[in-house]
Length: 232
Image 1 (tube, one colour):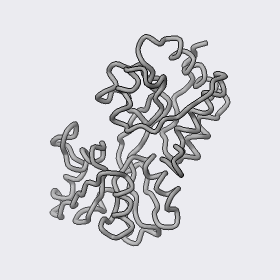
Image 2 (cartoon, rainbow, N blue to C red):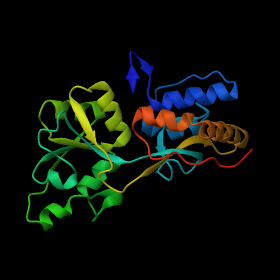
Image 3 (tube, rainbow, N blue to C red):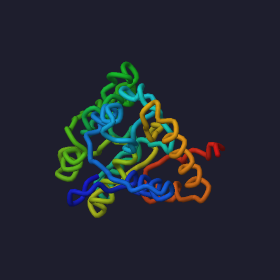
């Protein structure tokens, strides 16, 4: 997220903590997510900490240090007037997703989710399939929900947590609506093994003193953070 032109959120807190532990001055650059791998490979930045999924396209040339994971959630209007508890309650309703997200692929049964979308149970039960609407940004999707154009948003849990942070009196979230967990990694370019080891050492220390779990808890977004690696 960017507030007043300044990046903010869980990843910023974690990145700042890593910098302090390594005795480094940190500078954050707000970069389009799709451009981050190329920025690393070209040397425009040294470390990428922006919910990059381990094994995702574009990360093949990077070294990934695991630091958490995201579930899938539904964001609904505050008070949940339609009593939506899970995906099965979305049959015949309008569901918003962010274009290009894993949730869009899962909802449409496209891309990596071809033939195995999350909503086939609706037709199997003789109910109408959800109407899936894709929005260019997470903000556009949230606006659609709050204006009544969508009954729910199908998003990752970080997005759900951030929307609650920004619109806590207008939206709420239902977490863990699927078994999917996206494993997240901090990325560094190949060939910078010293930097990789330093980041891993900082994460081990954050795991040991509980600060990493605390950052994720405050963000309301993560799977249980990975255990300490055991590296010195």
